Length: 157
Image (cartoon, rainbow, N blue to C red; front, top):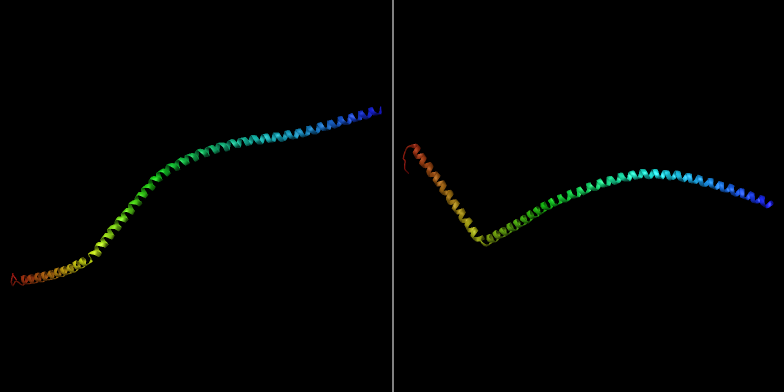
């Protein structure tokens, strides 16, 4: 009977240990349930935030697409302006080349005809002197003629 008492005591200690173990597991499970409830409520809030972010991202994507289309349209228009400016640049270059050719031609002709030009300048100076002297004589004759008419002396010279 000694052994039976020890067996009963051992069975009682095992039952008490099992009861303590069950209580400890219950406490842990209640704690885990609280944490899981808290995580679930956090995930619900996060779900709402993710939907809001998704909505804003979609709106931002639509705006970006419209902006890209607008920039492409303006870029195409700007290409036409750049092409026009490039054409003006070519025209100005051609004009400069033409002016250079004309200037070089004139310079070449002047250097070839320098002596003739010098003679023409001399003859034109002589012609201008003759014209000036002729005008002075005409003015002197007119004064003399007017003086004679004013004095009443003679009408012919």
